[in-house]
Length: 300
Ligand code: KIV
Image (tube, rainbow, N blue to C red; front, side, top):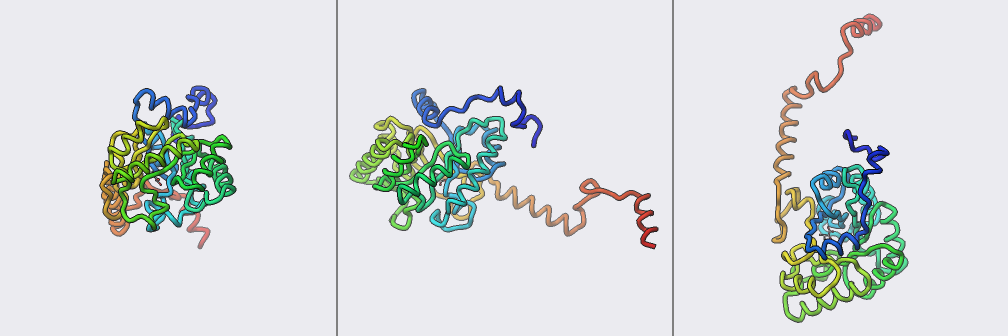
């Protein structure tokens, strides 16, 4: 553990800012017109790095299916996947200098199809280290799930517009592109707010529609491909740093080319192994002349 980051240090424990609940953090930021930045990410070192860089909110998204697990979409992602990575991210946040950063965990496909599953799985994600959960849609199962989970005292974030868990039934990515579809989306947003959500993700939605929804709701909107009018913006880590394969979607802004940097590092490593340059004496230990002699004598 890096110096100064021991989270058992009693002095450090006393200095820690108290963690605000997610609904409070969101409503205060919204009231002050203070935009928040969120990233969907999946492991401890990345979580710690993002906390040190000033990130406001972390999502452990089921986008891990495409971004990290090599699946074509989010549908194969399981509760076990999200639980393991939520634990890792929560440990990364706790070990950083900003342990108060909230972690929201996605309920994966099928995990909130019944009330019993929704409450059991919501509770499991909180036990794994999340402060809130996210689920997609506004059909009856989703609304009942939101009510039941918030009824246990767990904040819930909704997700409308393009909802990847329903991608098999979508014709195109951008949603809400006609006046009728925009009105429907506004009604859906009101229904998830009414069911108890503390925020709602709007994915791939025309900017005017997202802005209007943001104005009409009293909870925060979290935009991805939804224009600048949302209260919070979210991007997927692998897209943001240039680690995703395949063409990126229009709403992705790539802030670094980590893939090129990492490929160069691996090429150098492979080259140095082949040439014998790595490992050098500084990367290991010597037995020493005397012990070497004794060993050789013992072997006869
Ligand atoms: O799974 C995810 O990362 C998400 C965000 C893109 C909002 O749902």
